[in-house]
Image 1 (spheres, rainbow, N blue to C red):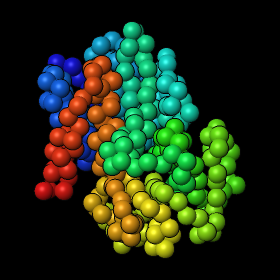
Image 2: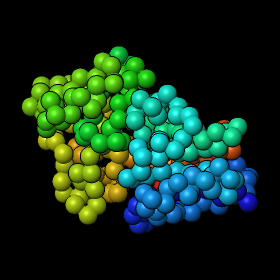
Image 3: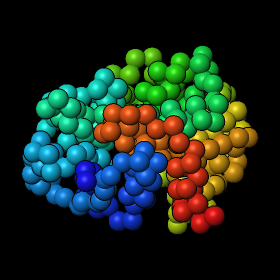
Image 4: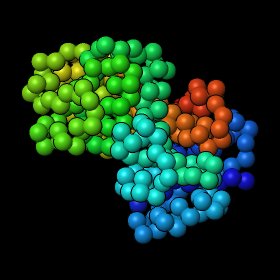
Length: 267
């Protein structure tokens, strides 16, 4: 049986094992997926286990998505531009790094038939997930704005994204567009009465996406004309990782999503 893992510093409760196991059941393959809390000093040992075949694939979460890149032989173009890896596979003897958060966000828009080509898209928050969202939106033809409380302070760190506009929250008040995306933790359980921007700003956009999935509807989403939460991205990035590891496409995404939705929201 092939073994897959998620490494991180403090993993706590994670739905990742259930999502990955459901994906493998749908594929009809034998594999297991488990969580492994590691220190930075333990990463080389895990890498050797992958090279040696003890572990067949690895997901990576905070705070190691950048550090793990130092141990890899190849990094995909989108992961390189994003500057973070969350999936590692052994391919022809080489360790390859992917960013499936990028694909998970694309799934979110594609599954909900959101067309952003040539349209304004705004991203709130400047963390690692924002970088994956920027890359996805740009590749889908969106005109992308990143909103920051300190635009000048972050401008250099996002300079590799050509065509990206970095604006302040004051400038955001004058902007209208197709899509607004919250990549900040504001509004996440248990502080569900918080919202990163005023309702009027959200109403200036046709659709909203909140990467938070707990609660199912954040205050941010409740103020949107139409919106999706982060569960599609969570499931989508996991399914993409399984497709990479098993070298096959999975055409039962909706079944897996419905299964996980039932677990997360106890439907």
